[in-house]
Length: 205
Image 1 (cartoon, rainbow, N blue to C red):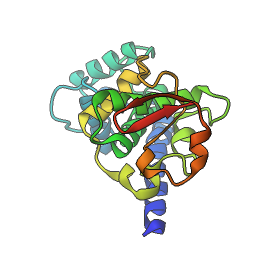
Image 2 (tube, rainbow, N blue to C red):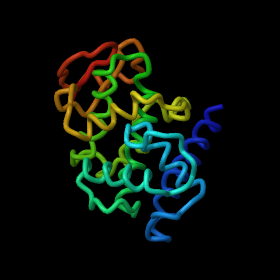
Image 3 (cartoon, rainbow, N blue to C red):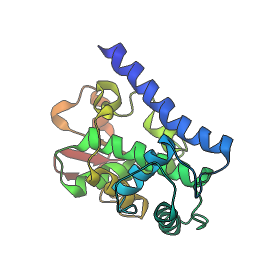
């Protein structure tokens, strides 16, 4: 069963990465584009509260406006064209949403944002990989990847939590670690300096 979970995580990671590579190869998705890639992008934008209708797989004026609004908020070139940088950001947020949902499902919204913030704090730390992808897929970094909960479909609040963390809200107080004391299997984590507790998670650095 563990092998299945690990293999599943690898396949899902490849899917996220392929989403970026496909865009790199085609340079962009723009008005008139259609297909599963467009529909997938629309679905993410919908959960991030930019796309306000049912995803169709067709890149029309509504999609272009949603992409442009997303680009403005995330400091990207606001041309309404889904190029590499835009799809990379969407992919990062989607990976974060899956992690947040798998790690903090049942926690308060503040607790979900705190988990997302830990991911970003690790990206900024020299002690961890320098990309969202690298941090999330670092070996044994997140329980949700090991036990398969990463595969669960994130609810909209998990996407919003990732978004709020990107916008600078850090309820964790700068933490690069968190843990549930009732589920600790490696006592090394107790050597970290505790910052605060939110719900069932202790946040530390």
